[in-house]
Figure (cartoon, rainbow, N blue to C red):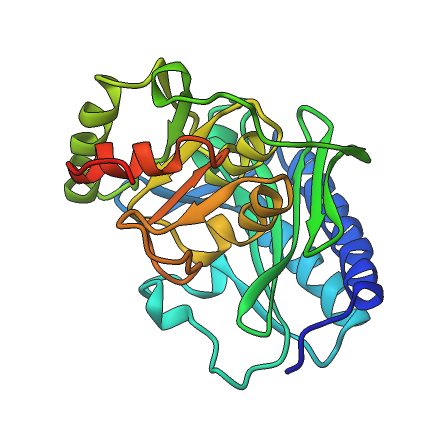
Length: 274
């Protein structure tokens, strides 16, 4: 499908904001009455995940019936690559109806609804709605990035030594240990590190200049699709962990304010900054 123009993107963004609002309302309505199950060991899912995804999907496809929908709760057991749409696919909405489920279960206020649009082979629209902070992060390609309607930009921190970084750890213990190795490398050089439990919010915070960088080895497209648009439109940089062009259907990602991206890549990979 062809690349959407600015008018189309504005329309897509408007509907995505409404869908995220409805999804967030579902999350809040379920807070005191949900049931919890495990998809895999320590990988939780609740009634709220399913209720939020249902209303988000209904809202998006009612407005755009010819679009496809890729939601986390429909893809249990698939690898990131197995969720990649065909090259000739129409516009695809990529949704995490509750990013930060463990936080939600424990009533820790760091969770959100994340809605991204994959169009013409690239992330094109991003909406991240945090109902507990009442914050809505929005962006579309070429239209800028905003927080509650106000323009936002990445930070101006120049060096890794002055950077506050965030990451996410998968529920799988073996994969988590792999990320701990990267944590150890960066802890020696960065000002501070954070692990909040919500990849989407981590990326939104990079876009808003609250964090200076984010890395992870084991994400899915619904974790990063919306946040990638936010970071790019806010002036940041995105690649894979080994410095290749960002691909939302690869599990690894590095997102920074752009000013010390090469330094962070080199630190992770044991090389010399470009």
